[in-house]
Image (cartoon, rainbow, N blue to C red; front, side, top):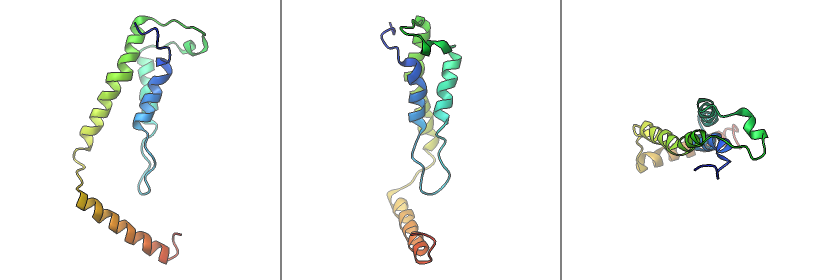
Length: 119
């Protein structure tokens, strides 16, 4: 069924990495960019993905392994995104509050430039 998609083994970590990677914000700590790669690696370990499969030409993988990869690639990564969305619900911000924060940052930046702490 899934034998026509040989890239699943490499795509699982990539999907999780991209899903959890965001640019570094100008203020505050960096985001947890490695979490996606970690989750992808854990998914491959849980599925007992053969480590030598990446070095073999025309490697044939069992159907149950391919089905597990398809689940990890699709519904599991969607579930992680849904959990992240639910976790962000308490962080409600209105347009007015956003504009207020942006104005404060603009003033802070102007002060920093005036005092020679920034260019």
